Length: 300
Length: 171
Image (spheres, rainbow over the protein chains, first blue to last red):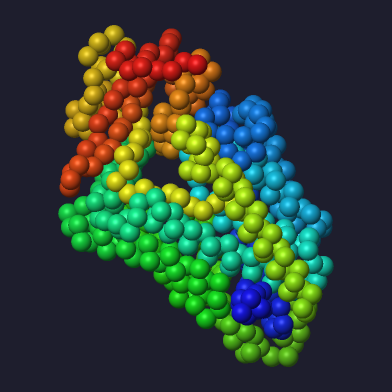
């Protein structure tokens, strides 16, 4: 059973297709993009901060206020950018691992003001998964399979633990629609503070008006998260991925919260996009296939 | 291939255990009550506890631009329909609402360093503006959600004023 579970995650025996290699490089590129995006979204902003309200991670042990002094945040962003590029270009195997350490420092400095943001966790876990795969194996095929397997596991685990937190934190009555009313009001204050305008969309008005609709929305979210561990298994991955998209769409529509990076990564991992690539490949003539073979060698 | 699976399994279990150790030792909910407010997770490991407490009262913040600090009636609680001053849109000046809300809700002491930390976030905006930071307390009773806005701090160009009706820990 344990072996079957591992095969579902890592699938080491199966031959790797050109489509899978291309898809992995796309996945890696998205991870690199989001890491650099966070590096530069947060780096210059750190100069505006002055004190640590909530020490997160390493900030509990080390004074990180030096990150608030110009130009520490920007320097860290430069370091993250260079290391991610070096990792992507396969110039130095530990590059992703070192980039992750700088990313951690960047995160704990940025969110030292009290909020614990989860928008970047999947990107961080993906960097960790790629870094671990790269350090563990030399054969690129094994690196790719290890990185993807770890992502399947920790993404599924993350959503399922979120469901357990709700059941432990509130109990089986967590989907009570009145709880959604509370969070809609909370988000409305946030929007008001951000824009200076109080604004409800039609779905929020519907949820606030009808308790049953609010309860149905929360029930769907809780059940989807609860069964997200099925993402570990190949046969359920696309179905669970689709439900998770639905849930994220609902969170965006009702709570005005987006988890863009998580959603993009899920979108790539949930479906067998490589099949589309293979279908396209089968239509090529011999000369074109040869070019793809050379490209495959370069990409791998 | 068996050795490859063994290596991957060791990493999987190792990271799973590492996640368990780091989350249980850093997540506020697993700490003694008196330290819960000050501890968080160990990024990127998380069990994603957001929105886990249904019906739990929440605290957010709202910033209003007011004419000056002289009005003694300024410090009373307000509803969303009778707020003092004018709206001050944080997005327009590139400040993130979560930072201000959490600064207000999670700060236990309000010493000089903390107040200066908050003033630094607003930067040059405070050279000419009086910004009233309000604490928004949300709670539910029966089927009704209520939100009360209480003036918390007034950031003026020359000084910072605290609500005289509230008690602030300074140590």
